[in-house]
Image: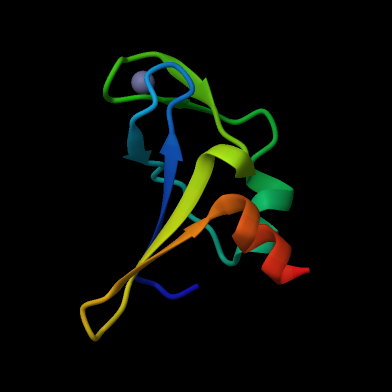
Length: 80
Ligand SMILES: [Zn+2]
């Protein structure tokens, strides 16, 4: 988890990804503290959607130009 990592959420209503805007330290802290009952306002369909590790991903933009996407459920299991 670098500082170029952003967290995205997939809207459960329309299926589009959008940046969560949630600040986090590392995945484990993030999932254990921030997530439960958290609702985000989808910019695509304007509906509120819940977020949990199954509909989240981390998008890391590396210095060499590569973009690495980690599914939320995978990020969580790696931290264990
Ligand atoms: Zn939506």
